[in-house]
Image (cartoon, rainbow, N blue to C red):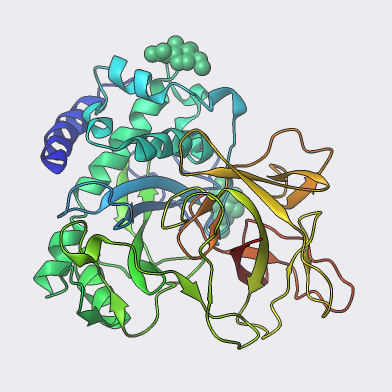
Length: 410
Ligand SMILES: *[C@@H]1O[C@H](CO)[C@@H](O)[C@H](O)[C@H]1NC(C)=O
Ligand SMILES: *[C@@H]1O[C@H](CO)[C@@H](O)[C@H](O)[C@H]1NC(C)=O
């Protein structure tokens, strides 16, 4: 039901938005990320975020959206090298996205309608975080800018792209269907999707289960009414295992119940359950609550280490991991973290994680059933692997070393 609303409304909205006040762009505008010289007019050229990702979720626990459709996550402007900016304009981090969309004749208000609360919050977060970093949506790009006008343009484009990417159908056509028993190879999933999209698609898993897709594009002209061309992925590759990928049904049957979440500790000992004993069970999407420790696993070393109280990464044997306190947010899906040093936040300037008394606004983190997430991504980074007494600064944006962070209730 939701998907039908979505599609009808989206096609109306996409047609109508062309009349909006964004300036018209030359037909020969260069393709974003493919320019060979500097392009001055960033109202007609997406820069620096010229690699646009349409991201989709497949959420089985808890179930989100209809059983036969993936759900829209967001539209992300990545830089041409896979790094990305976020939260680019505090003044446009609107808290009333739902009202804005409902009040606008041009925008797909029904996009929000079939979405459970948690996804609605997510869409609001998506604009502030990612939409404000899209150069062609800057207020100065509009001839007669009306405040919040760009929000409708962002979601209209997002829904328009989403509607053209019927992942569930494409996978089914290749015999890849939700099942509690079947498993699939990464190659088969990628082949089914790249055949249709025209370029490789980044396929992400959590706990070996298909969970998120990133379809990537370059754009000729503006995001509002330019031409989207499928592009080769840049940045992080697929996180799924090569074989044995599960694609669980949403709801119904035993497939809807959460699989036990376990992780293999980096020291090679027996798998340890990461299910917190305090607060609600941290299955996909639910907020962590109470006290715990954050351990690090990285393919670069068997000694992953852990995070200490300032939010940095430490790998020295025998040292004691800090106790973190997770406090759920009102959305029930995100939570904030603090330590004995103070609140924890990902800094806007350089995306580094800091916990301390100087942190006034704590960041919202998520938990995908196996790992901590920030901005929907379960990977954190450091410049290098910390050695000895080094404290590695942890970043949310791509650096030389990547790792995942797990929670163990304390
Ligand atoms: C493409 O254009 C952007 C924006 O003007 C610029 O920063 C970038 O350096 C250009 N790329 C090349 C290869 O000139
Ligand atoms: C939403 O909030 C902005 C300010 O952040 C305001 O300008 C706008 O009028 C509001 N829109 C609606 C529909 O409430």
